[in-house]
Length: 369
Ligand SMILES: [Zn+2]
Image 1 (cartoon, rainbow, N blue to C red):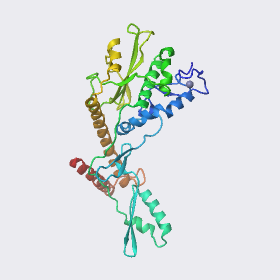
Image 2: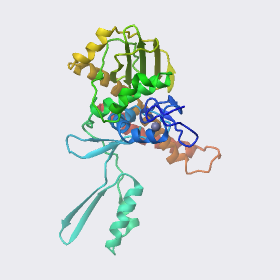
Image 3: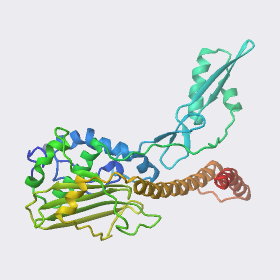
């Protein structure tokens, strides 16, 4: 078995899992027979990372599960104050960094600290205490007020689609899939220099087709759809991420391989393969037309697709937040008792109080929205 990029033999020493759809966005389909470890890491650092970066906010919002590596937080800003926040996976917005402000009050200097966790507050205060001999750390910790500040404006996140490096990564996804399906390297060999960034090719474009498949409110897919048509001499692959980023890749316009139709549908919310059976059979003229007269009036379709995935993302975040609130309340109340002891009336009451305390602000927040 040879690496389809560098043609070096793949053996025990350099074999590696190549994710057909990148792992950063929850890609599950993988093979050890595609790339050697050297090519895998080269592409990981270049083209793949551009795609991962572009899809990061959707991956986080939708809380996709990955084979390896933790999700990166998404950074957004509050348009009112300009302050940066980050949204943890499944979490609430948190200040991007703690804030420390100092104010002269007569002879005294007042210091106000806004920290994100108790641990962080203690760290900051210990730092201050070192410089001020009179500073009482424990007293300061006790006087800290814990408040759950709510943002009044929605956070802004930037979403982009496409771009040179992303097009290369999308092409590599399509090539991976073609080779995974038993393709012949000679059909796509000319594209290797392109995905390495050494040459330019005009073979990828955004592709939004109305009602290609029924999309339920609570669903979101990664899709690969590969067609090889020797009669029309075309080989192409439709690539969709999160039912939102949609591309068509012209893999070869002089295709002389076998008849080919391969489909892969991955349901992100249920983390399983599904069968959607889309139909997208283009003749040569139609297919080449997509790359000649590029449709640049895609905005409303792209926006519609984003609306769907962001809506779904918010719902998943909300479900997760409710779960976290309950878990935290139970931990804060019953967590301090030894495990396995019978629950007394007092414990029950503490637990209820803790839940009410945490869930009320959440409900008020929801009603305000
Ligand atoms: Zn290689």
